[in-house]
Amino acid sequence: MDDVVNDGMRIRLRDGRDIADLLALFNEARFLRYASARGPFASSAELEAWLSGVSCSKRYEIVAVLAGRTIGFAGLYVMGEGLEHSGWILIGVREEFQARGVGARLLKTLIGAATVVFALRRVQLTVFGDNDPAIKLYRRFGFEIEGRHREFVRRGEGFIDGYTMARLSDIRGPAQAV
Image 1 (cartoon, one colour):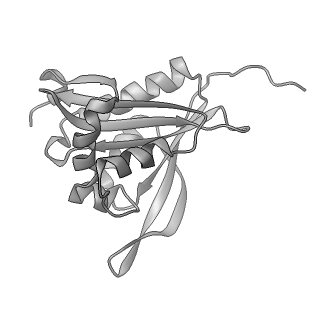
Image 2 (tube, rainbow, N blue to C red):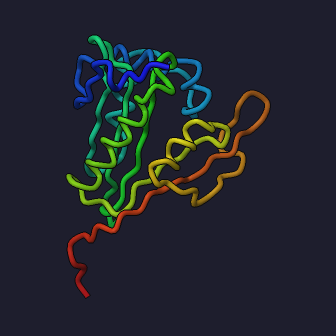
């Protein structure tokens, strides 16, 4: 399989140019099945409103671009209100580019930002229990399963469990008042 990371793919901050490609990504059958607890987005405006509405104190959203086309998305959302040491992530890669290094490159960039830019001690995510490729990727980057959410999401007539996975860093934040 080709490694698109070495084929001219760039990682950059998300901006207005990306929304049409992101709508296509977030509405792909595989994304809806393995990464989304909601149905498809009706429009770019609806997707933009959803992304903008993510509750966080700070956000860092990046995209993977190949030949002018946005093929991947990753967001790091820093918590607030006593949870400033932690953030959660969301990653998606277009179906045709999965298992080719895009997710790994996005995740590596998010972890770098979490460590260097935001000095986060904890980065977490939720993954569907049957998304084996994603779980394998997260484990490769030091994420561990911390909890199981039984019957987390409905899929057809059945339910799928979800896992909370987290990666802890030894970074020490500002000293806490005693």
